[in-house]
Length: 177
Image 1: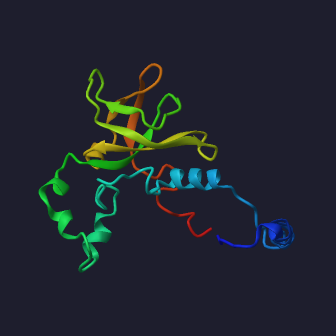
Image 2 (image 1 turned 45 degrees about the vertical axis):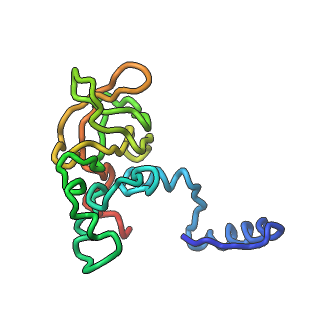
């Protein structure tokens, strides 16, 4: 993708030129919402939506990247006791066995429980998969794959299953198509 900056008076001319030239290259305009859904299907992180100021690289699944770097500002904070707690919120995927939509902000609780174990950070309907997809921050999330939880928000609680983040093409086989 590219970002192009032009004076407002020239945007229509640029749009028409790009649309005309894009036909040969099979280029297609795509909106922001489509990109957000594509990244959600792949389990890609959206900083600010799936994270907050307390999220560490390990919480988001990128601890291996941070550990490879020799030195960087903030590295010491990653080794503090609070950053190493096994019950920290970690980014995971969610599946809804009944196909019910999952709402951003809804809380995850153990069946019959009352205390929040985490919350949905991103959610949407995947036309490619024909079902809803979601990401959530869940206490000790990566160690809970396959666990069934209740999703509590507006309306009746729904049953969800903790899953890998990537709902679509989890092995990355289509990444270079």
